Length: 119
Length: 119
Image 1 (cartoon, rainbow over the protein chains, first blue to last red):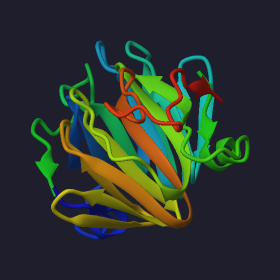
Image 2: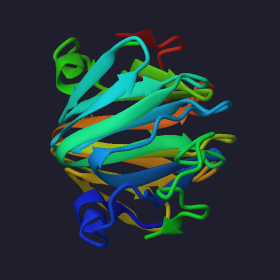
Image 3: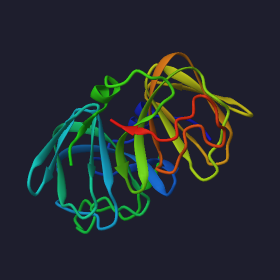
């Protein structure tokens, strides 16, 4: 029952591509993640996934187009849609998605973290 | 399958206390609302509700304490917890909550809007 300051939470970690949980409601998590470089192509069979850019910009590559997302913009990747986030410079992202969501979806890679951490 | 620019969406409406829907995922809505003044005391029997401040500041009054929320901060009001948002100056808020959520919860007032609009 406390408020959350998003910038303070971003200051608590430095790892890239490893979402941190900062809130839970209605079976969903609010997460923060820092991105730089290229992630793996993946999809989520059962979960839609919201990416909101809070710092910098990213491209969410889809199979048929690229979504350029700047600060203050979000995109919802529908379930079963293959996507690959890319960030030329470090970008800070808020994610909103079901608690069941694995960050690398159906793709296992060296980036996969099985159990995400609360901060 | 398009991105959403939050500031552009805020420019599309001026009404206070009337959330507008800007996204849908996993049975939840992303909404924007402009607040100024005092809302009604209410609760949601089945839905947790996230308030993220994007401009200005608000107080979410609970029965046992006040939550002061500034820009970049969020608070999740758990289901069944009575609350009353108050904003001295106009504040801009992003809400995450289940599609079933009525904005005035179990309280009907002249502020109640039965069917919210997509923008």
